[in-house]
Image (cartoon, rainbow, N blue to C red):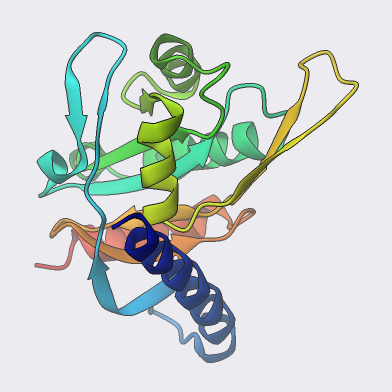
Length: 202
């Protein structure tokens, strides 16, 4: 089962990489700007315990768009930049549409990021954002399912070691399918464009 999940995760990562190249070459005006998965794939479901003791389950958010990002609170640059861009993208939507978008941050550094710590970090960007962590075993299954790679790197910084990790944002659509992904540095307006397009499509 673990090997199968790992193969699926690695296959997903490879597919997203290929699509990322194709979307740059063949993108047309009015089309989705992120890396499109065609056909969409069912997003691997998972559950983790939140900081308040309640259970988060991805499948419970059907009917909303979920922007799923994997990061950590001690990240010096990529994670805070991405979280700020997601806040900007969501805030650019009308209130009615913004309420249909849920940002979820999943830890890649469980040794330091408890559920409480990562939720406080998510709150710093937007009180509606959800921060999740868990045990290494729990998170490893989720990382594998989404093709997330991570590596610990020693550092002389005050924050201690660094975690090199996959830095894409995954978009799970209202039907629970993995529809798009966004590379690090995608302009917030491009993310807003895709959110609006998907939310306004019946």
